[in-house]
Length: 634
Image (cartoon, rainbow, N blue to C red; front, side):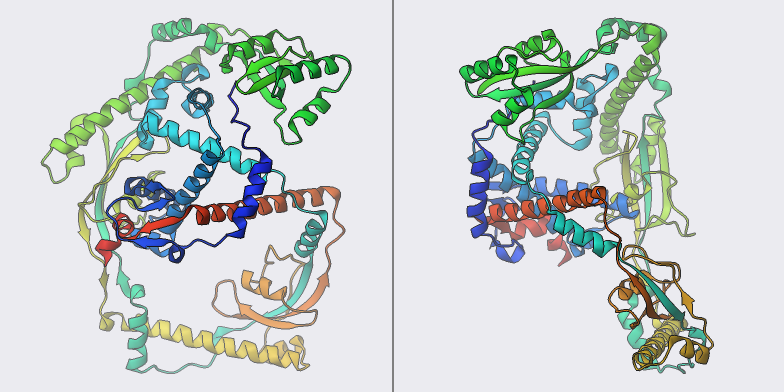
């Protein structure tokens, strides 16, 4: 059974220290930390350093993740502009601050406990649905971890999770707050509106040269042809190695025979437990339960409302403590065990449910065995070829190294002779027809052509190497070449300004007593009425901005907003305001849960900020600038 974190760090201590920390709370930002010139780590939290390698690795992973989500690469410049660099560093600081606090409370997790957590993680399971050393090693290689560094990271994460769960677990929102939010969200409105006709706006005339050049200078990016690159992608995928990964019927039979037990469905038991500090207390409660006392009442008295009573449905082979396993799997249903010794105390166990096991025949599992063996063989091949590819890339003198390696090893090569940062070829179509295309482009547009690029782990578990062999810099078209486009932009702006002025004049007339219908007749426009809508969803005909404006106005009030396509203006009048209906018990409970999660996030953020202030954070500017490329950008 997983060894529990030492209970010396009780919730009472956590909350007491939390109160002290909040007294010294200060929002941490770049301006609040101590700045130094330094050649070592990027930052320090107390006495714990954050190395440049640790920071850049985390930053690279975050940029790649965001690139996948946005469907286009995030450049280093965008990363800095959007605050991604600072956010990643802040998260590292947060983790260390919480970890240091956990250490100060004596919270620990043994090597054995960490190993059990990892062995139980499905991400590391192979054939037979059990832990696979080969799968684990492959995952470590793909993620750039050593076994020791991953163990340390996993240990820290588990301890931080236990600490923060103790802090925020009991926070909840009152019914009154949930009721207010329900009524806020449930109110509906009906709007009458007109849409102004941009074609009826008077011609703004002809702009002078000075006005056009001013627009050109301030909007140069609009008239710039983006940078383009020649990119090659070498693919090493399980699909490409499918034929090389085939296994024989004899290999399948032998693999099943060698691990026949692992393919059976084991008996699982739902185990409940109560922990006690001494054997005497456990024995006393055992007698009381045997005498009729409720097991649940005993658990609440001993471990509180937040103690983990139910350990879930567990197979015997998932439990490392043999005395625990023996007691649990020899217990009759709903009977209570004798006290069982564990590190730091004693346990009483009860089995509340038994899910029978099943012995499966070879014919029942042979397809699963084959699939597992072929996946394992594919992973082994990928690992072997990874090293071979790296060696050959380093050994070749060719200007297009990946093309030479792909030809020699008979691997697939994707080529894009002219791709921009959005992943588009010169014809406007996607340059790479691949589900990981945005990640290829994100890597290709990091740095310059000579920037070293790590292989990318693909969504199917394979890998890709990226090579940039040519860069065509972005070019801003001369003013004379794009003068007509500049004038078109000027004209669009003038028309929008005229529409905004006209819309506001109409709003003022309605406020003075004129009706929307009379104004619409005057302008030759149609008055339309929306269906009832809530704050969260704009109705057909109104933009999101118009819907938001509608909820700021009283009944009969008038306002204006841009149309959905931003080509004109909408003028509206509030027709009806309908309060939300009475909420059901289920609706209030759902909102309480949602608000409780928000309160927990706020409390956790406050706690972490207080810890950072308590620990003291130093930012080493020169090391940080080198890590994010600011020393080259300036």
